[in-house]
Image (cartoon, rainbow, N blue to C red):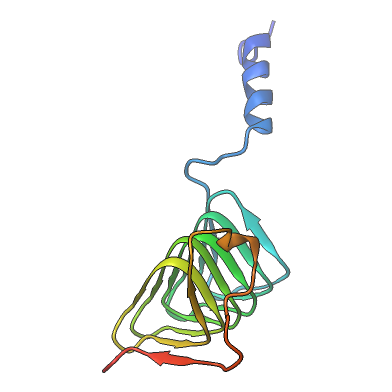
Length: 149
């Protein structure tokens, strides 16, 4: 008889392997890392480096100062401190910090653009199906918004 294993313990371990970690899942793309491809998570993605592809996170996407996403971002909440070159779809809110740039359309319920933050694209504020990836812009022309300095 092994003292470190039991049938009950094996069942618990097997259940944990099959259950996704939804509560505190945090994925970090480090500053010296470049990821090519699509990222999907139930939790939070923090981008300190470069992502070349779409990012989908159920809870939050945080692009920190120096971080860069070259693709669309889909989440409940998106906080941009670096740069996004693609469309942003957020069911909850988008925050564009003072040194941040978004080159693409934004669809969200709420938005905060800090002084010096830059949005180069169309803005659509709606409550329906934002993370589904529907186009944000409803006008033909490209709009540029920059918070007053």
